[in-house]
Length: 310
Image (spheres, helix red, strand yellow):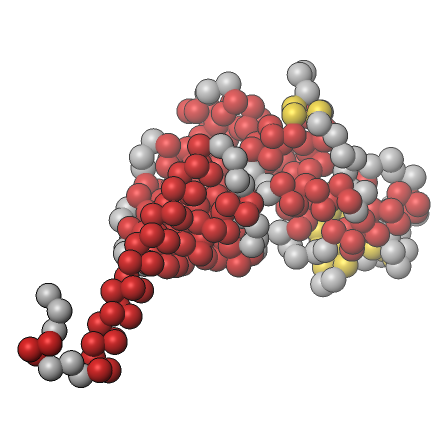
């Protein structure tokens, strides 16, 4: 299979460049410009774990501890994972372990002749569902890459039957509907992703885009603002928010976001457009300020009508 480049990874898994850089800095994934299919699986799991609000440092410490106690080369690929409180739990062969404390979450009696307990079965079923959802997600992405949209749509639907909380599947399926101009269904899926993961900036950005298409500008603006609150360096969100503010006549607010966009991306056609809009607003505002100053001066001086300048 051909390797994926960095931009492929960001686009396929729909993550922000800053997230990937943070995981590289933490040692959770090696920095590279070329990624294998297994790398995509690992990065996908990191994305899902971060969605549970575990920090990269906590994940890194747990992965290191799990390597030490289990001998696994890559626990993120070889074991299931879940969050319990502030701890990262690894599940493997029906057992669940918190590796930093070196504790099993459940007691297992290896010498017992009894069959698996209900808890054992639940752990195994959870592992199976997670593995199945991950496999289906990557298969769906491959279908999208091959322009097999009908097949991809069916696969994302199957994922959401397995796990309605799978935010990336909601996002990708929503985008298929968006591209087919089925905006109401796209909106529903984007809202579902945002509800599942309130820290998923991309969900709010995409929600803003579809609300903009539906002419719901106040809601679109709030969605873009939510994306920027989560990721202040989200250049595309600044750009679209600036456009939305201009469309409702709030040029000064638009100017703030054109300026923010240019600090993040100052080359290329989008930057040229942003720079042009910034210049237009500054020119207009200068004229408005001069006009208001002139009117204020006349009012303060209380110039008699006969002396007013035409």
